[in-house]
Image 1: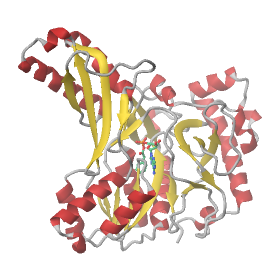
Image 2: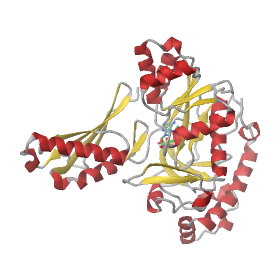
Image 3: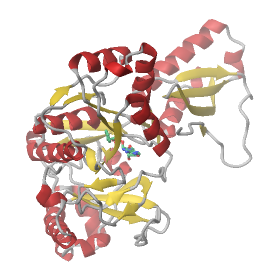
Length: 435
Ligand code: DLL
């Protein structure tokens, strides 16, 4: 089943032609409307007229997450706020969030993209989808919602959290499709098992993404919930969910190539990777966005592309499960966290009695990510009473929650108790082995 058969099954040559036509327009539009791109293209000696098709894409300068910080909040928008109807945001490399905006047409295109994902897993008007991705500035909840609404599915916009209630709702409201992060799906499955109600669920499929997960994890979710579990990929900077989606064959995620162009580059040399099955960094260009267009965006996600034809009939190339990142971003409970954000909070508190020696430990317990931060106290604080230490600990927890958007456990430890390194300090220990 397709949502837009004409596009999803377009001959490759036509896709390339369409991408070229749209790219030429988008580059001119961006050059005329966004100062950052105009400056960068001028510096590189590139004019919009030099881009005559996708074969010229490599001539354009890259863009980076730091651009979104430098032009915070609206500096990369190509339209005035009066044309922007919705804002979304996610964590940036420092305390500042990255902010994107959608026009009415962008929302319509976004809904098309997420509707395609739902149709590709067999959803129809008779389905009831429980959207347990977070609603709000995160793109997951609204992204899925708009696509489901466009298809006429019945949407339960429950957002994430409140796990037992989620399960009661799934049962009482007859949810047939679950949309959430894969780790939350496993947690829901285990909770349903504990409650002894798995048999009462009517779920047939789940649409999971926003964080890395493995085939083994897919198997567990499928077995525990008696569903088919599909992977979806996306990022705030491009459109949120809807960039790429699995079809019924579960063999890689089709990229919505009529809206986004993917390049794979070597993150060291920045040269394009042409060989099949070679891992590289994903670089995306949007070719018909109005509010927040983006050219050659270095996602830092590492992945592999498959170009063989898929049995489903779609001609869009497929992305294998992303294989990690080329920067240090962590995804904890679906939220993007940069160690630099944590460091900044800690350094701001050095005058309160802590030192700059710290360690971040990420783990997964009961299928939920945990974040522990160990910080050495300065001798003065160490000699202080327990109440002062606890007060500072609480202060740090509160500050971290407001900066990161998730809870962290902070433990103030004795002076000199964190192992010193002879080379680069190992600040982050990620113990999560994705089951
Ligand atoms: O996570 C958008 C999204 C929402 C995708 C719901 C799918 C479902 P951000 O918060 O900006 O946006 O995080 C984007 O998450 O660069 C990847 O590193 C990671 N990511 C997203 N989907 C997958 C996936 C949303 N299926 C960052 N597998 C991306 C692995 C994923 N990593």
